[in-house]
Image (cartoon, rainbow, N blue to C red):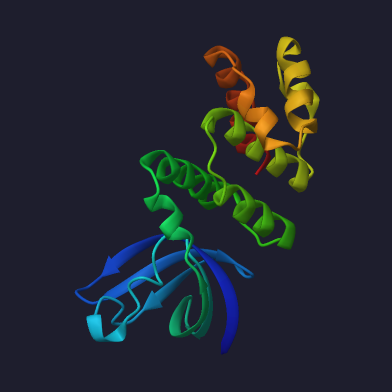
Length: 192
């Protein structure tokens, strides 16, 4: 069985001297793709198979593993991580959340992941909370009662604000951020 699909590369692992295994999120959910001879210079794939890149690929299925045959398109989001260490950390946080919680494919969730991945926020914590709240909303898991009474007003404001520039201007206390984040993570662990 073979097919063409788009994938966001979450991680890559060496599999021998020349091969790589990619952990990806795409139209079939989270998968692993074997890329034979990916590290051979004459194959020319190493820049394409970097984490954060969005690739269009033709793959053949062998058991539970897909084997990459060809890359048909690529958006090199990995180069955004080279702009600053702060941007790299942000992209790792987004991809880490995608890897942990985006278990099945949904076009809106895929778009949400790409939208946040390509941001360059000054305030990672606030935007990461917004990303997690958006995820809860898209999954139909958002409930206001999972949050402590004293932070619900803030959560409503964060949930309703779509202008990322305004969100980044908020200076939030660490204990508020931790309280909201802990509630989100506890809710996800009990729900998914």
